[in-house]
Length: 464
DNA sequence: TCTGGGGTCCTAGGACCC
DNA sequence: TCTGGGGTCCTAGGACCC
Image 1 (cartoon, rainbow, N blue to C red):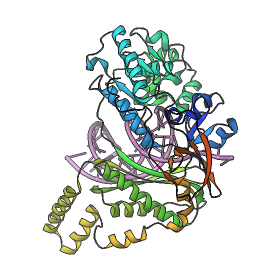
Image 2: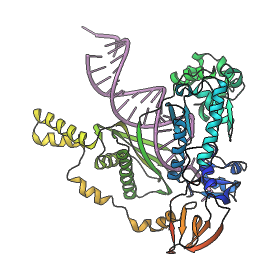
Image 3: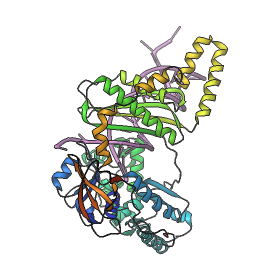
Image 4: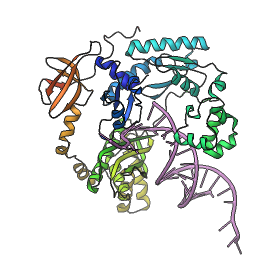
């Protein structure tokens, strides 16, 4: 999808079409998630600090991401891809590989091009958004082709022409070559793909390590036989927060870690997993980042166990100077249910009792299955957040820029901005002309948050 | 207004085991 | 009895991707 988040916002908000739109974090430490093509002309791009984007494009519309909305569009697009082939490998909300051969719909350039053009038309009809298609004989080349195709295009790279096409290009177009590897290669005198292709595999391995060197050597020849993989299991679940101002207070840091642990476990459980390794992540005031991890004897999805493990890991971290970011993750995932865990803990406890006293086996099983006993209630009480401090933030969230609202008299609209007790709303719908702006009190009883409207009007999309 | 959040994969060293 | 050769697991960090 082309400039996906920004394009989705423009589709939802007629007044933003043709205008620079920047979607990203609006706090003091936010970065750009997606810039519309209009905003890119000012030099704004993904991962840029928001402050820098505002200097470059002061008149752009700045919006927070609405992931649930983007996900619903993404599902529509992925459904269309699923009609082409059973082998669809999503890379993110807005990008996927499709194995057309496995779908039996295309077996040469002409048929593939036809499928690609029909797909683009279907995506536009279904979502109101444009997508770009790259067609080639491998994932790597198809990806490069899709980059070339953007925005709103289709590029087919005929098998056999890969090397001449890639040769003169920068090493940076190869997947897996980022800033560090690019610089590494430049210092070794290699800047183009053909430089890499001419270098021996041994030299690349010596330079970049076994796996990276070997794979880059193959990619530089235009050779890539990685299959399209439809279902891959998640390997980890994590949550993290960057704070608007650095945290110094050790007690506050501790409670934030505990809240992150709760959120992480909620997501872990929602995904139907448990995990063995708990990871704490700390980014300090100077941006130096460290992780500390602990592997349990068995997988858990118990919030108390994860919270306590994260807390123990924090004990060993020096936070003097301040903390900018905290994160908690769980890896070593297993798809055990809670029942399985209890059964497993019982079994292990039984096993331990055979050779040990009852007292020591009880503490051992606690270490495995978690302190789901007496510490639970106290810890849950301690984790209740201080709501009074979050009052202002709650108002901000309720009227976040870009979010949909409904007014009893004026109908559907979206928040253009808010502050000093006022909220400014533009009243328009995806299919309407650009609408008018009105301002209300933040506690106006006639104004309420609402769900995003579909971008394409009407129910019958299937015939598209 | 200087740097998000969610992931994946790889490497390297040490412990441990046979 | 001056020092092997694998293999696996764990931890920490780094590069990369969207």
